Picture 1 (tube, rainbow, N blue to C red):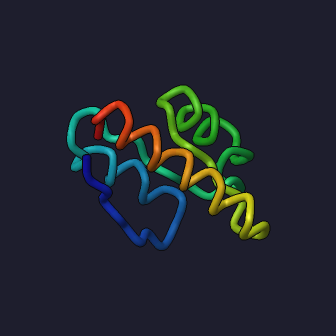
Picture 2: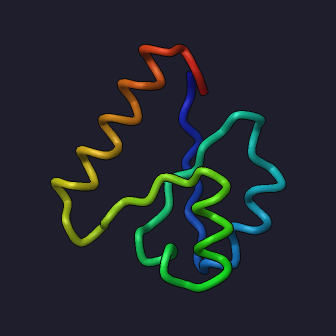
Length: 76
């Protein structure tokens, strides 16, 4: 398993990032992106994991749960 960290500057940058992501890679995006209409729905349907950056404890919980799942199932 591995983690790829990308610092994109705009929500539309995700479209180009998806082209370069390895197979079976699940991106983590800010929760606000989910509410951007069609882009948010497309991200949700693609399996993005959304974190709430304004609630640090919740974000840490989601990322920790994802990391445990990655280690347990040996997936990336």
